[in-house]
Length: 500
Image (cartoon, rainbow, N blue to C red; front, side, top):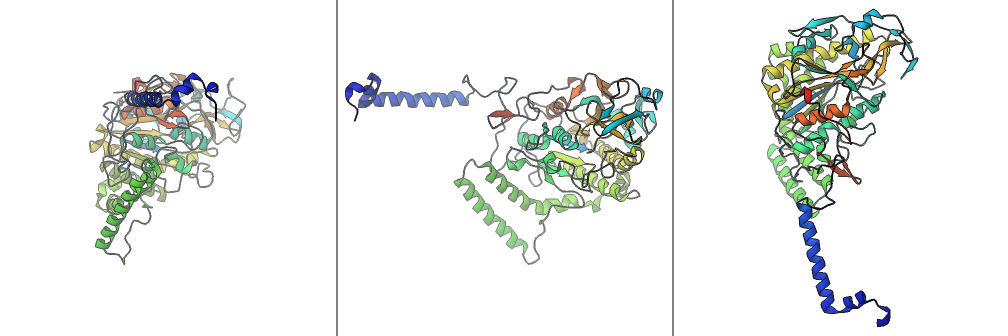
């Protein structure tokens, strides 16, 4: 035991009962004050984003993570449809008209690199399809996509997009999650984390995969990353509904309902004993949603009530097998949006064995044949979907995004028949709620090789889409591993010129 002469004056005060109680009381009051100041965001060390703004974190009820939540500010877009084309659609053969390619066809002008992603380069190649003026504006669009070309006056094109990688897996990751690495939340997960969904009987975020399979990055394109598990995309399509939804024939409807009621009570009790466990809450919410989907999914997937005119407009019959399957996926996308699903991501292209232009847009060989194959599948159904949404008045509050991970080179590869990856210039377009019509933003250089006027990053693109949904990309964050993570990392600016 220490002798009194070896104890400091402060230590001797703490040994005094009255001094100890006085100090403890002041400490407890200080802790209470700190908690109140923190709750009001008044502490000097209040969490801040990379831009110095305070985060806006949605107030999520763990028992009902899909409940609708208000946006950060009012905007017309309430839902979003992302039409994603894996494999890299050639901008210089579709939407980005470059007359200089005709002039220099077959030549190799100075400045063209000797080697690109897949090897030695060949000569400049003119577009494989003729460009023609479309609509009242005369926007030049190629004959590869004649049905989408008819709607050119309704689209808002971005011709100066750039990305950070020329590899497909990383490119898909970057476009859909904001990072080239895996493990980050997808765009759809961020939106549903922020806003929830109006329809409580269907998933908040549905990924409709191509009839041929998943894209190169698979479920990472619609995963939840480090966000709560409830916000991952639910993937199914018109040919493959979610599994295990049908009630076994040996179980009556009444017994099934009683079983669900019992499970709900047990789950609620278990969650009450584990407060704050978001993974548990997400699993329970998923199970409860699965129960509701037993009724809602068969109804939304039943296309038998669609009119003959609708089926013909989408191209369900009369084309290739894959066009028919993709067309049914497009009708499913419209039906999901009609029922209030917040985010629908529709894939056109897969990667079961490398793609190579056969199952997606990655045309390193015989681009005239392989791009034409993909266009036959994508063009008519996609154009019909957008026209259908417009005719039904749904584009007043639905944003449509048509996108691919990067572009293709204006010159051929050494094989003389394909175009290599081009991360330095590509085109995507928007239409619907909140964006200008008949508008083109930015441009690539004379060959479509590099972005020239107002180069635009994928960060900018994603920041703009979030803005159109009423979300501040700098303040929509999730605290993870010591950082305020966000879809746009520490980058990105809203492209104000696109806003209607």
